[in-house]
Every structure is written in structure tokens, then in C-alpha cells.
Image 1 (tube, rainbow, N blue to C red):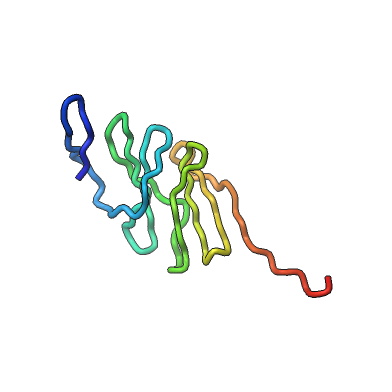
Image 2 (cartoon, rainbow, N blue to C red):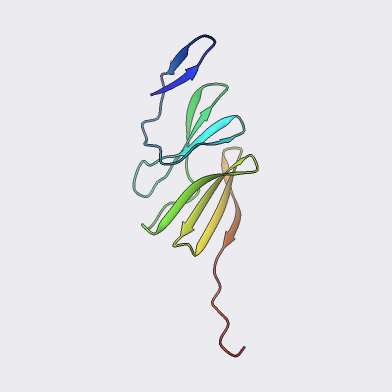
Length: 117
């Protein structure tokens, strides 16, 4: 259930997504964004437009393929960022631009140099 503060009282928003929210909200471009869960391998983003008071679902940029993955929504200088981490070794950072995900950067560990190099 969602309520917004109107001119003199609280109003109920009738159309609310039924997915459980798993993260804190990230505010960007006049909208609040939350990470949700609909299946074990899918984490859609729920977007609430503050102006129109409507909800939208946005697909996440990556499918979660193993239980060793962590995902987070973050604020990247006023834009919504999606962090995809594999066992703290590989990190991908995606940015939401015009309802499309664009990879911002990717970090992968390199094997250590051999001894005596």
C-alpha cells in the first residue's frame, strides 16, 4: 500500500506493484527507484514517478545466475546505478539512462605476477 501527501491529506495510490522491495530507495530524475524480487534470478527495478504518481517496472541489466551474486542500487551523481558483484571479485556498474541500462565500468582481478618477476 502506498500513500502520498496531497494538499490537505494523505491519498492512496491505487496501482502498486506486487513485488517485494529488497533495497532502500534511490531518487533520480524525479523518480524513486527500488530493487525488487520477482524470481530467484530476476531483480526488476520499481520506479515511482513523483510527478505522475505512477509505478513502472524496469528490467535489471543482468540476470542473476548464481547465489554468489550481490546486487545493489546506488546514486551515481544523480543517476541510478546498478552494482552487480560476483563473490567480491568481479564488479560491474551499470547506469540507467533514458530507461536503458548502459555499462559504466567493470572491474576484474588479474592474476598475480609470478614470484621473482
